[in-house]
Structures are given as C-alpha cells and as structure tokens.
Length: 316
Image (cartoon, rainbow, N blue to C red; front, side, top):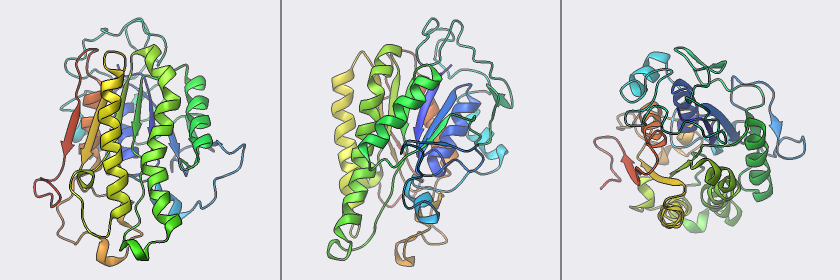
C-alpha cells in the first residue's frame, strides 16, 4: 500500500495519470494544481479563498506535465496492471512491510478500503475526493507551502510526493520575455523545491518517498528551450543532491520522461509542436513507473528512471 501521495500538476497530463495510477494502487491522491481536476468538487484555494490569477486554458496548460489527458480505463489498466493490481501492492513491496506507520496514510495491514474499481471512495478514472485538492500557483512559494501543509494535515500525513507540475516557454532567448522565462524556473524548479521542503516533516515521519519529474531535456539541451532546459537540469541536480542528503530517511527517485501525449504542447507555436508522426509515450505508461518507484520496500531505492519512446529524439 502506498498511502497518501501528493501530486503537483495533478489536474492534467502525467500528473492526472499519476493520480489515477495511485488510486488504482489503493493509495489516496492529493492534488495541487493551478486549476482544479476536471472531475473534482469545488477546490480549496491556497490564496486565502481567491483563485490564482491566470486561470483558464493557458493556466491549465501550465501545470500539465509533458503530455495528454487520460485515455480510456482500459489503457490505464494496461499500463498499471503489470506492476500493481487494483487494490493490491507493487511487486517486492512486502505486503505489510510498512504496517504500523500511521503518518502518511499507512495503517496496520496497509488497507485503506481500496478495491477493484474504487479506492477509498474515489473514482479511479482521475477522480479526487472532495477536500483532497488545493488550487495554488507553485511559482508563489507561500501558496505552495500552504497547500502542502493543508493537504497533509487534512489527510493525516504524507507517504509520497510526486512533482509533476511543469510549464514551458519556447523561443530564442532574446524573444522570450524575462518574466515568462523566469516563471518557467519558478514553477519547474523552485516550485518543486518549495513543495518538497514543505513536505519533508511529514515524509521523514512516515519514511516516505519523493519522485521528482525532470525531462530528457534536462540531460540533453536543445535550441529555443533555454528556460525549460535550465529548469529541468536544475531538477536533476537538486534531486541527486537530495537523494544523498536524505539517504536512509526518505526515498528519492528522479524520473526522466521523454515526450508524452498530453496538453503540454497545446499552446505552443506550430513550429514547436510535435509532428503528426512523432513517437510519444502515453502518460499512463509513465505513471505506472511512478507507482513502481513509490511501491518499493524501505531500503530499496529506485534512484533514477528514464522512460521515453523507443525513438526519442532527445535521448541518448
């Protein structure tokens, strides 16, 4: 059982696929996003009741990770079933190995009432229970930290954090406005840091796990993506340092995905969109690897995962 898992960017793309995968594995997904999940009840706001500025289509694209909304349930089952059966545990998770942990949503035998089709009353096709999501702008450190604390306290702790929120601004450096360029750094890198910092007290108590989402472009840079490449390279360095810092206390995994079929590309100029024949992964397949990392027994670490299409142009 993987317990309470906080997912940033959980309203769309890889984040939403991860929410569904966590629920199917019997966990309780908790979502922070700049917009509410599409099938969720009215959210709380980390801005003292006010919606963050810039909501709407552009805002929704901001906190998508790198690819498309959820596909049909059969696709989700196909992606997750090889690793985790509905209501079951990941291979090697030592069913009950973490029994007795109460912080982070793990209790006794690790059962939170999940079963085939539903987990703890949450719709497994991306549904998030009322009160299990907060709308916040991760570029605002105070909003990010407040959202983490609010969800963690409401849920009774955290076992895991997945930082799937991300944005991009394509174009030559001299043509991308300074504010836009810096916002990519604030959301992708500093937002990741803010969320994890706020979650650490809960994760250290539960002996939990962090999965950060970088990109193949954090390892191999390309033209007209200076902000995104810089931010994701920062996530790579931050995660590797964090893994060394927290070794033996909190598990840390660096996920390096390639291109995926998500709304991440929707607001780009056509020259920066994948072509019709582009080889892209489904976010559900990538989300299955997130659940795999979260389900490892204590002391067994999946330090880094590169998950990309067979013909990924930015890898190796």
